[in-house]
Length: 246
Image 1 (cartoon, one colour):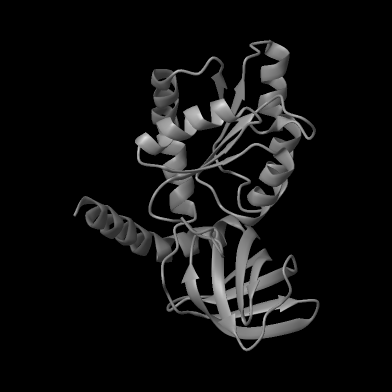
Image 2 (image 1 turned 90 degrees about the vertical axis):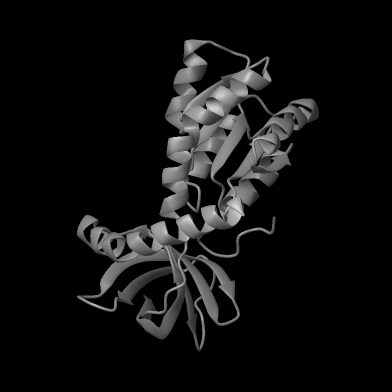
């Protein structure tokens, strides 16, 4: 499956597994792939951080005890910025010490998977996470819709149009683009009603296109964007499910 190039999602659930034990990676990968998921495995925590900063995943399985940076630091950096701030996070450990669990939850873990790992327990955990995975996937579900948009940074304004929009980001085409990581103000002119305004960050620059993550949007603005997008998102999900069943 090709990596995401802008804020959005793919049809199948996309998982990142991070563990410095190849055998454990292979086990988790085999079980999750058998459940119909797309799985990437990484044995180096620095590589994991780089991927989490550049790509969107539907869930992350992360070992606690790895060579520095350990799982706690990876989790904290995952939660601090980028696509995966709210992605369901499962931390893997053989240590049931309450102090370890406390640190894990404080670092951003949603669930724990305890070693030794067995197929049945892993599948139970996957079923338990399905609701949060689907909610997060819907939040990043892109729909192709063309709206006029203004992107501003440091007094500079770029006029363009959206190629697709999600509840959490926009992919914009214009006659030029701001640099990656630039903080921007975004004004999306919906077909009806007042424009939706938000703060964001350029996560991808592709020639004259920008993938922008909306990381600061007021609740009333978010509600109006959701009201516009939700029917389109649900229709897209239904079409994907129908195509997958054929």
